[in-house]
Length: 161
Image (spheres, helix red, strand yellow):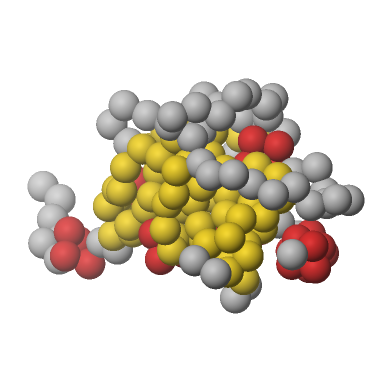
């Protein structure tokens, strides 16, 4: 008979995530990175911006760049609809908005149910992915927002606005 570690459940690290959909995949990002979630709004185009930069918006007096996560992840474009959202996050002390197809929910999961991603997950560059969480009925791809844009791209996005 094996010994049961009664403290295991007490020491399991919980992580809180905002989950959202882009295409058929469900992603999660650390809730501490998320400043707010907004409905789609009018985006002002910026000339000569990288193709994944939709433009900028005025968010309570601050001009912030908006990145289309579908384009950034190499997924086909679709029309925005009533579920489309802009997730406003902080990356490297810069505020950036990411367009996603829909925001699902806020989740608290145990780090125990996550594992390192395989080399290639759903055709998305694994550098962006910190882990894959195995939920009861689905997989959740945990994104590292700090790596979705390279340092050069972050500088370009900031210079454009």
